[in-house]
Image (tube, rainbow, N blue to C red):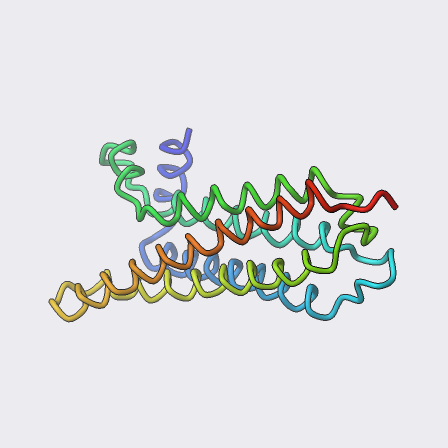
Length: 191
């Protein structure tokens, strides 16, 4: 299916258009993360109602996930083996997608508790950390993608450093998301 969609998109668009589309998707990722961070920081967690934390998380991270999928589809070439291309995409796109799916699933499972503020205040602290680190991962991904375009040796060492940074920050976000899940499972208040 992805091969068909990738083929359709590649045939309808020129390379320059695809580059612009990828930049558009990267922009959507940044908008999704910043929207999540700003709304989380400005939310008053003492009063229930309004735009809930779970609602903004679902919308923002769904936008990020959609954009990652768009980047993957636009980078597949229909003249080559699609499966091999998908395997050769940067590993962190798949790990980040899995992490975002995990965050979306806990926000769906605890939707009403989060939106009605029936959770401990520590959850919100960890939530802001999680979003901040996902923004850092996004910036590091952009740096890595830009360094991949040039093949000189200084860029290869920069690419290795950026990949280590991405791996470390992804590890931190997995720990933070585990802490958030534990807080929601064990310390939620029945409103």
